[in-house]
Amino acid sequence: MAEQRPSSFINMLLTLALVTLASAVALGYVYSWTKGPIEAARLAKQLRAINKVLGIYDNDPITEASQIQGMVEDDSLTVYPGFQGGELSGVAIRTYSNKGYTTRIWVMAGFAPDGSIKDVEVLEHKETPGLGSKLSLPAFKDQYIGLNPGANDIRVTKDGGEIDAISGATISSRAMSEAIQLAYDSYNSNKE
Amino acid sequence: MKKELTNKENFVKGLIKENPVFVLLLGLCPTLGVTTSAFNGFGMGMATLFVLLMSNLVISLIRNFIPQKVRIPSFIVVIASFVTVVDLTMAGFTPGLHEQLGLFIPLIVVNCIVLGRAEAFASKHNLMSSMVDGLGMGVGFTFALTLLGGIREVLGNLSLFGLKFLEADGMLLFILAPGAFIALGLIIGFFEWRNAKS
Image 1 (cartoon, one colour):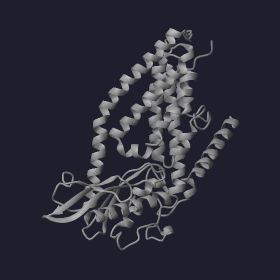
Image 2 (image 1 turned 90 degrees about the vertical axis):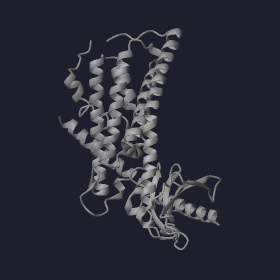
Image 3 (image 1 turned 135 degrees about the horizontal axis):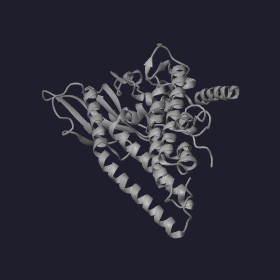
Image 4 (image 1 turned 90 degrees about the horizontal axis):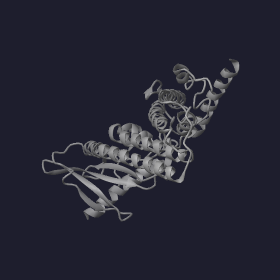
């Protein structure tokens, strides 16, 4: 067993400076190395979600995307339109809710031209693993398919709506409904 | 001088006799938090294993250059760097797993096992024994988290590693926080009983 070095002001200062410098260099390297893959993973996920919620389209929704004004706060939502043979086949809207259990939940919601929901996908969330994370499972999110937020009440049943909340995660479920309603309301108010 | 353990004894002690979770009771925050399923427990265990191994390695290498009074801050910088490496790498290359464990990865920094092993072991032993110690403790931690996650998933969700074996609702309690305490308490009880017998 080796004795540890005695401490003097100079060697403490030098050691800490060296250790932090080495750590900073290493992390900078890892950051630039993983930056591309992280961004690619995020975009791939977004594209998969657009694909899934739009269904059929023959245009490029990403280049034709536009920003619309959100109804509640000053934030804008992104709309990805889908066209099939020149006809509008649906829109995918990147929407969010701040009412989740932790941070903002990002959702991709797809609507048919008549306003009914085609499909929804959760993009990003930090809900509790095992509870709120069930938002992205078909058992929960497929309940929204076919409903029209203009005619149906898409709130959870506890609030008088038609959606069965995930047991143990009512707050997360509410946030999902809120995000979809926000997308619907914002899109309609911008259309007029 | 104390008797040095052989490499094999050194490795095996982390599994059962000095299992970090069930015997040393270190690192209980991520243990209780992420073990909602066997796979989450396993993923968290592997991430911690990597951090333990690498931080033990580096700390053992630099142990003779670090002045006594600044050893803890130096160790923490080393550990935090490796945790950030794990976090970024997982976000880039295993986005699915990172989504599940994302909240808990940064918490590895404050996991007392990692600093505990750095202070109690790697700062006093050579490179080889420190790496073996890190590996043993990491495997022990992974084993503990996978076992706990497995038990909670089986009872709470009637599935194991995501495979559902019975189409019915399990006991939700075991997925929730109280179930973690109950399951962990029973396992610790079992280990105590076993150690008392031998």
